[in-house]
Amino acid sequence: MVDLLGIFQVSMGVLIALVIMLALLFLYVRDITQKRHTVLRNYPIIGHLRFFFERLGEYFRQYFFLGDREEMPFNRATRSWVYRLSKNEAGIVGFGSTYDLNAPGAILFVNAPFPVLEEEHRSTPPRLIGEDYCEKPFAGRSLINISGMSYGAISAPAVRSLSRGAAMAGCWMDTGEGGLSPHHLEGGCDIIFQIGTAKYGVRDEHGKLDPQKLREIAAHETVRAFEIKLSQGAKPGKGGVLPANKITPEIAAIRGIPLDKDSHSPNRHPETGNMLELLDMVERVRELTGKPVGVKTAIGGWAFLNDLAETVGRRGLHAAPDFLVIDGGEGGSGAAPQALADHMALSINESLPRTVDVLIEAGLRDRIRVIAAGKLVTPAKVAWALACGADFVNSARGFMFSLGCIQALRCHTNTCPTGITTHNPRLQRGLVVEDKAGRVANYCRNINREVEMIAHACGLSDARAFRREHVRIVQPNGRSEAFNMLYPYPRPRSSD
Image 1 (tube, rainbow, N blue to C red):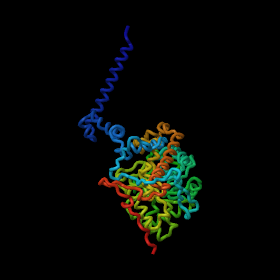
Image 2: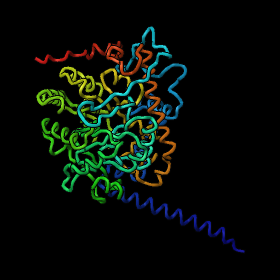
Image 3: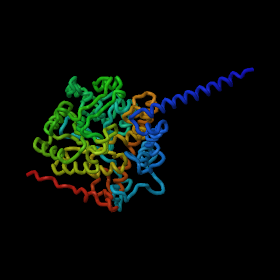
Image 4: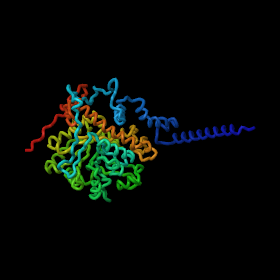
């Protein structure tokens, strides 16, 4: 009796082998005849291994080869710290720290010989924004808050998780330049509405600011303030880009943009070509909304800050922005041209103390609140920013890590494996809002708690008492220097 099954199996094996041989032959011919890749032309077929390992190299290095403190933009130790805080597992380590206390730039705090007793601990008080200069000032309750991440750049479940978590923890959430969505409003948290250069959500048919739409946004009780974005740390001088493959019908409707093509923001507000025009816009938005209005920018030098101080000095305190969000050149949760991400704008390490210095010299420090941003994701970094003179800290990537971000570096491809920066429903499925909202809240609460712990160890009753003398920075020679010696407090200029 003929073994039909055996004949079938042999025939299938031969067919599969033949298909593989034909595929390899096709690949061989294509490789040696193409003119684009030298490696494939000289080494057909096996040359593809080079591109395969090149693509996977960053992931192998991340998990197998780099040390805990070596990876960029955030090393494994920092990410693990954020993960533990968001899971309420406490930032406790055993057998000593892997943090190099002798590395240049290392942050050290000056512990007090007589720290504050636990029964004398005091929670850090809120700080008002816009007091005396707008109809509806608001109180920032949390030291750390959620920085601008647009709906579009991140997914609906991510926005919903952040909104719910922010409400639970008492911090604010910045909308980013993509407009206000129902997902932002879902949790009932405090919201800062960002007016980007494209004015998504508040634009008319010509792309200009629409007063009526602005008033409609301001009518939401949870929208506490407005932020005019000049630039961001990831790409100063370059507007945002939302690829067409990340634009859904809902996003297109919220932003007021076409559905089928990339959305490009202008690289600046067309109506603000100088400081006078910028302050005109600040006053106009504040008059239309009755709420605090601030400016977000990266700093490349001191001309902008000096111009701001001098112009406000001439026009009066009413013309000043209610807050400044200073984004360091290392900032940026989304995609950006590498030339700008690598080389444009000062680091927050330099721009933040200099900004505070200019405001002190001009007598504007009490008028303008300062919000710092730029890789400030750990309690030590937040405490350092407060010691520099910041009132609050904004973080985008810290909260992305709390959502489960694994730093896959695919934010712009719509293939984020954790569902945070993709609109693919299959990938979004892994981001469970109820669970991630709790992690967002845990991260915020624990950062605040640990910053206060550092303050108490420095002998301070609360974190608002930090000053530059409470911090030391390790220099290239391995010795630390007091931060108030590196950046001495300036004297206010005479009003004469």
